[in-house]
Amino acid sequence: MKYLASKFIISAEKLSQCPETTLDEFPLLGRSNVGKSSFINALANNKKLAKTSNTPGKTRLINYFNFSDKFMIADLPGYGYAKVSREAQARWQKYLEEYLLNRSQIKSLVQLIDSRHDIQKNDYQMREWVNAYNLPIITIATKIDYVPKNKVINVITKIKKEFGGIVLPFSSVEHRYNEDVLDFFMNNQ
Image (tube, rainbow, N blue to C red; front, side, top):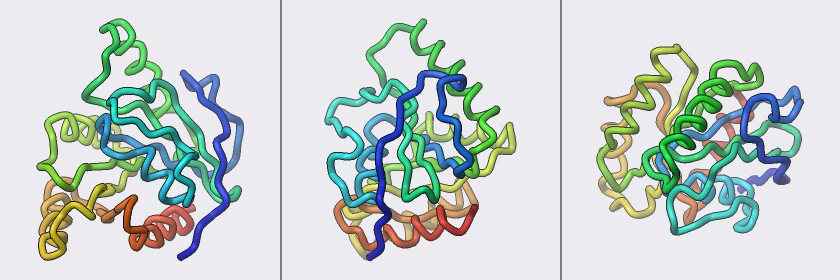
């Protein structure tokens, strides 16, 4: 199993606060509680790198993580749940759209889908928005360790049928899928 040295860099609310870097960037899109922080921690083999929470909606900024000066992962606020005002949600949406549409370092968006459940309405809405702007994207099926082994192929096939493109399974518990994800990040630069 290969791991890359990784570290937290900075949190940013909007595009103008993002770090200046030439590294390729992979922003994580996903519902609150889909496992974005656990995804980062599993890739880094460091359970304390990105803060995890049982309470959805804790990530409120763009959190940057550097992986061995090879690429950056940007952990974005989750969509679908947040106990904040409509005004705050509207501000997040504006800042995130500005970031996703104008950040030149973005190589590909990474949408995380909880493999234990059917694709949710707001997952479809996010994908429609991404497709409307023709942005590059891959899909990661998280929490695949909760899916019975004889159903994993069916889950991946179903997500691929709905969203197309690359769909990779992932488990923050069983690190056997890490290598495929890291290979994607390393070979798409």
